[in-house]
Amino acid sequence: MMNWKRIALGASAAVLVAAVGVGIWGAHALDTSRSDVADDKVQLADAKITDQAAIRRGEYVMRAADCAACHNSTKGEFSGGYPFVTDFGTILSSNITPDRQSGIGAMTERDFFNAVRHGQGSKGFLYPAMPYTAYAKLTDQDMHDLWAYMSTVQPVANAVDENGGMIFPFSVRLAMAGWDMLFYDNTPLAATPGKSAQWERGRYLVDGGGHCSACHSPRNLLGAETNSRYLQGGRIGYSYAPDLTGNMHVGLGRNSAADIAEYLKTGGDRSAIASGPMAEAIENSLQYLTDDDLKAMATYLKSLPSSDETRPDPIKADTPAMKRGALRYEVNCAACHGVRGEGMGNMTPPFAGNQALQSADAATPIQAMLVGGRAASTHTKPTGAGMPSFAWKMDDRQIAETLDYIRNSWGNAAKPVSESEVASIRKGLGARKNLPAN
Image 1 (tube, rainbow, N blue to C red):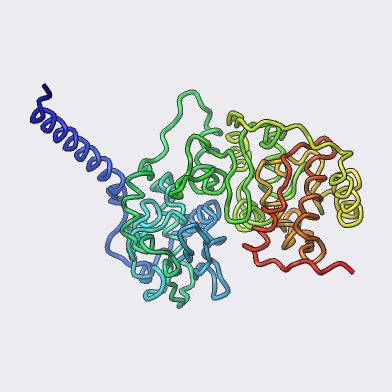
Image 2: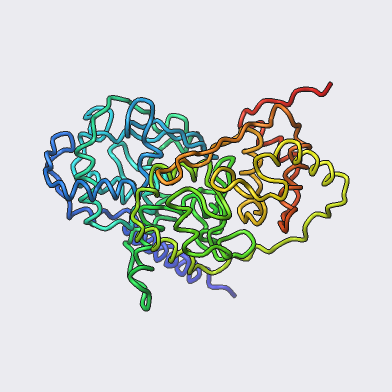
């Protein structure tokens, strides 16, 4: 006969132990004691920092962390308002100028550390669209220097309702405390035994300021990065950030460290030219990094093991749809991308052997066909070529067929693009419908 009293006592004990464990875990995730190294008296609007070396280092940290890409707006540098469209609503980036009322001018250095590294701001818990999950890895010195630089930024009055577009209950910032307890790693990077200083620096830049996994890793249903698929490619709205692992088919397996460093600095290499969000990251951030730091990032990325995405069998070239795609490519695309998909040097990317084009997720090339795009424009390669939209000219089936031809020619191999996926992205982007054929 079962001893229900003993079972009840055992269950109660288990619940108590679990609650204590969750409490300890939660306390660690929400602990901000690392910020104790920062000043908690002088507000940013009143800070008068004259250490020019620290300010210059802080500007470099700002570049490495790509703050401008999300916080710049037509109202002024770092004035906020950039929209992040998520499954839970729309978040607007904060005004991070020293304006005391609408910016972060009333923050002390400690408040600033709490926001950047712990996701706890003056209005409550931050949403992980702000990559504090990566910035948690920033060193105390880099944070001090970043604070010094922010004290030199021109204040801009621009009130932003950051979470006004979020869906209830996600509009309640306190909910992010639970998210942090589940997914936020509140620890700095630790050295990896046997790794070189260059590798360690590369990992720090990739996983810390660069927050590469914020785009290049897939996310779960609650918006947290899937750590088991680190840098294996991720969907961001209607774009797809490609695989950065050593995968030979869709990753960086065929790129040398020199290729990767060139791409990060200039916006292009022998196999690809950056556009869209990556072009913004290169223009605002990566082109400003030193050659040594770019080589370090490349060294780290080249050390990553391959993802498990395999090369599918290419679509047969003699199918009616592929033949239609080939003709449409010749008429609309070959002038810029070449009859053999060879591209035009630094102007337009090659399609032959372009790993990013062959990912199972075709969102990025679909978006480019629907709304066009522009290549990165950098100090080294200042002419960023533009691509027009073909939404007015091709229907969903025609775009799918054209992309199938591109993604399965010249040695490429990729899964078929579905007409319904093109239709969905067309609708989501608000791209125009094609003109009716005569």
